[in-house]
Amino acid sequence: MKSFFYSYKLIFAAIISLFIISCSSDNNSSDSGDTDSVDENKSIEIFSWWTSPGEAQALQALVDVFTDDYPNVDVINVSAELGHGQDAKTVLNERMAANDPPDTFQLGPRDLQTWIEYDGDTSDNRLVSLDELFKSEGWDKDFPREVLDVVSYNGHYYAVPVGMHRQNTLYYNTSLIKSSEIPTTIEELFTLAEKLKSEGITPFAISAGTGGWTLEIAFFSILAGSQGAQFHSDFYSGKLDMTDDANVAKLTAGIDDYLTFLTYTNDDAGDLGWDAAAKLVYDGDAAMYIHGDWATGYFTSLGWKPGVDFNAVPVTGSEDEFIYGVDAFALCKDAPDEQNAKNFLKAIGSPEAQAAFNIIKGSSPVNPNVDTSEWNSLAKATLEQLKNATVLHNVEVNQFSVPGATAKDAATGIADQLLNLYTGDITKDEFISWIVDNYKAATSGE
Ligand code: GAL
Image (cartoon, rainbow, N blue to C red; front, top):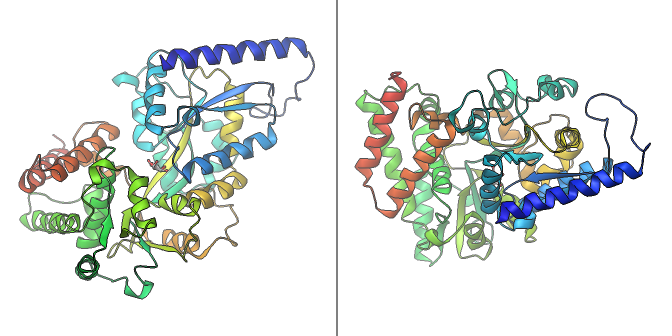
């Protein structure tokens, strides 16, 4: 029903555009390269799952930079119209399955393969290579190597990255915890949690109402904090020998700490999404929150001042690591308006767009030419950590969680197991065996 509605809308927009084009014979700007030649009286459709406070405004900031340059191009933000990010993902899947693509959509590097080898078919690529754009804008040289790597597939760039989010972030409400109280070890973190609990405050907010991905963020953050950057990054990069009992013992100790952490969280996580969990901290019902730093956008959109009403630091013990996720936008094959879609993608990679977007979103820009000199102390501290820490992309570990699966299915695999562990559907021992067995199979090349 929904996809019919949107197809209808698109056809309507196309008819209007054709009408306008036929009425105005000579209104095109002159050709000046691939991305600038454009009929401006058109619309492009974008899909994103950013509908929560903070992220929705950040998306609008990207759109605004584009429409400043192309005021006559109407940007149809499907997520805003649907009102929920999850619905936008569902409608996007339906539309792609029906060969009715939008112009551009948001994705994470985990999703690349599923679109480039659509439905497992290596000859059915639903995205268009953006190599020329990366070259003409100098992004292939300017953007950080690790980010370029994760937005490419088989040597071609397929998505324009707009920001890097630190996932191992510990938020705290400064009216409940002073910065000087933030500890340096996981044991001390639990001592602080115990104290808060005895005062009737939930130490940590958590959510599990939209799948296991929120638990996955907390799990890997605690594992890194508990067992140290070296163990964690070896685990991530597939370098651990899981036939060695000492490594299994370390993994088990990390899982034990994660389970201890869960005892200090709110009971209603199954009913909450990530933003509702953040709200517990905002309301003063919970003191801390381990989550990706898009929660900064959420808090500031409610009026909180970063570094004043709340603060954020790397999760205790994980200071040497910056576990990041990238948000990016891709160009659809058979996009109804490829030219304007390219112009949109060009705009969102620019320093101007990334300056406007990332300070609202809570992320760090990918384009190094953004002027961050006036950014607040929290945003600057995050940038500083990014510069000095070991930078790890959140995809890699998942390649070791379900051997042979796409990154997306592997990520879902471990997130599902964490949800099962959370709900008690599997035991700790079953969870450990699941990881160890898959890891062994993946790293032995079976
Ligand atoms: C993540 C995305 C973030 C944030 C979050 C919640 O996948 O990378 O930018 O928006 O979802 O919507």
